[in-house]
Image 1 (cartoon, each protein chain N blue to C red):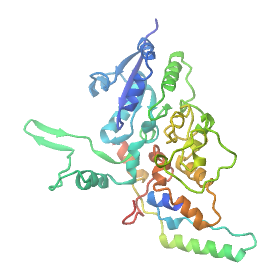
Image 2 (image 1 turned 45 degrees about the vertical axis):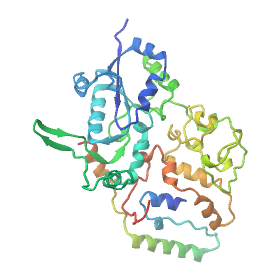
Image 3 (image 1 turned 180 degrees about the vertical axis):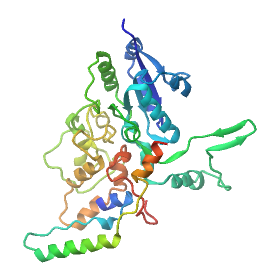
Image 4 (image 1 turned 120 degrees about the vertical axis):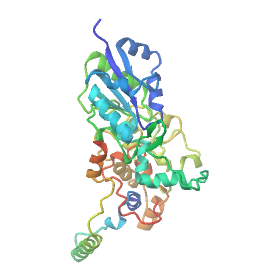
Length: 62
Length: 326
């Protein structure tokens, strides 16, 4: 559901991942974090939308 | 008798319901008239911008602003009201947090215009005619306000002293606000003049300790048990995240809470709080089952931010929207 909310808000749902890793699964934890970091790196910074504060400032103080 | 207070009421991107809420205080309006002169109220009397501009800065004791800030004329009105008013009140859900007009923030202004003037089934507009902000006529130039890229809550544009929530505001809180002004005992700046707890605290429906939902249903498609918590019946109700003070009026009348009073004091982002409240009542053994149940919500973002999209912490980004996304 959160992914759907993000999608509606114009954020790539790939930016959200929920995994449960037990304390004994060190290997899996490392892999999960590494994998997600790579996904985020590949996606790069979020493009600026209209929520860009600079746009807002210009509009409301015109 | 001491000098009378001066009240001003400014509408902007609103439906008019807030103006009705003012007269909804019934005979108390006579007391208001005794207490204060209404120096500006274009909805009720023939006031123009110049009448408000003619008042000295700070000459209005309390300014009530209703509606979201959607076009550049609303921006002008917001700054004008701030300059003229000693105390500025965001009146109603739209002024408080963007309200229904801010649901338009899901789309760009161009997308909204395209829908309105080109693709709505009842529209026939082969030439693609659009309203213009300026138009030359022999008598001179005519102008219309320009829609901005998004709708804003009032406090995203100017400094706001108090908030009276609701869609529309409830008479008892309008009266409470007027009484506070009359007595001179104003609450701390930034106070939302309503309850301090959640709608659930006022709700007369019975609820069990553990909510367990395995399917969500839309309220108009089922008969709901009037004695029992709506959420427990799988009907989305915004009560857990919504400020009380309305005496759960909608729920008593058989409807789910839509969240018009905005978040409670200890909730920062209403949509996030509702997402968490809804997700935590779902009972599922597997991820796939949870996805299936939660997938029954067609428009979670629209539902959770129905009255407050302008104030969501995340904000609509649009930048990563793909073709076909709603």
